[in-house]
Length: 494
Image (cartoon, rainbow, N blue to C red; front, side, top):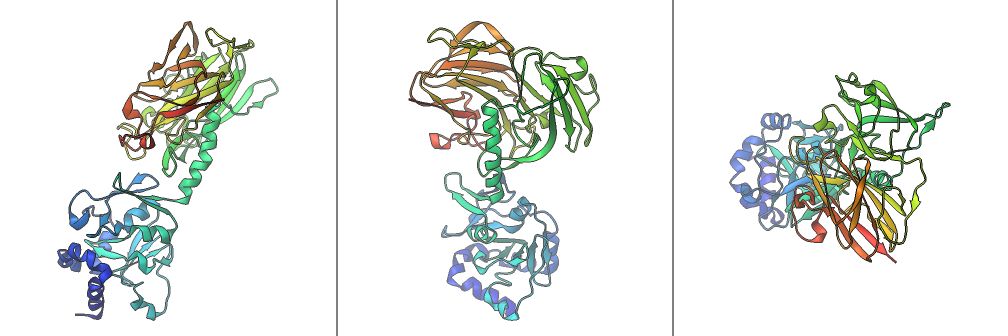
């Protein structure tokens, strides 16, 4: 037996590694083949084998996510349940880092660095050739605590130690049986995005440039951009101006509007101004009213804000991907005539001046599902509960909520606990007869404006009553702390 083989066997016999002995003993013969540099190089240059499962190779294993994105291979748990190991390649590729095999140093090289120069005395320290290999992450050798181990031509490390070494947050959710890594970039992305979400909720419109002729000019840029439906989860969204939902257009009835559309997507696109009455050439239907706007090209939409109401805008090219990926937003046209203050009692109407005017775009995002599948995160203005901003109102105040269903396939039934509301407008026009209700049904492409007086103190749920729309990550759970999706809270205080 060579010196290296003796060292490996000694490590396997060490008490710290005995818990892995049962798992490894049946695989030593297979693993001995994997130790050849040629076999390892072939595997490290291709995709993960996907053969790793749970404890002792049995069961479905433990799911692993990086910023909410599910990795292809499960984690492994030691026989005494004290350690969880993850595959190095999976984590690295989820972080968009290249992976290669260094046969000279018997090491996995992650990132653009190389094996660091070091004193040969470190060879026996456990940092190099640890249980059959070592890992260099962005030029730094992972510490001994990560315990790199090669098995079935894959290299795994202890999950919690890896998180410490590469400076990401680590959590093992025993309920979901899931290891979760969260990067600082994911945390920052959510903080940046939630301010834009709050602007959409409060109906805050983009600030226009006023042309000499009085036209209100805006710029709308289509681009791929990271987006967080909840804290710690990031997906690549199809966005307008880098946000989901896109920024709100808010103008007054009769305003002349010019929107400079810039396409920075990898494919063509157009914009449709849903429900607004405008010239045919401005309707945004490719092949019918205009040619597709190619990547890197621009198009100017120009029209007059036709009539007061709640409308939307969205892509009209590759709709399932672009709308389903986040390319939509609210377009609110305020009436030219002054609004009327609410009376102490009686019906609320579309012409009432409200204490609060909220906007909610109901949709969803794909994080671990394809565009052909149901969204795994249903969203209000691009975020899911518990991270949807609450509606904070005082008792006795009046509230208008503009509901926009821009979902590509799903109907939604929005239900408010504790209070009734009145339906005051549908699809951009006031209703002839105000209707009192507590649940309103909205189909794809529809809008519904509801209004209420905040009469009951407390935190009241406002949510879709199609219950698989109240989930995150496709997980149907029970208990308030585990709900997600299309839920927010109306917080009524004195």
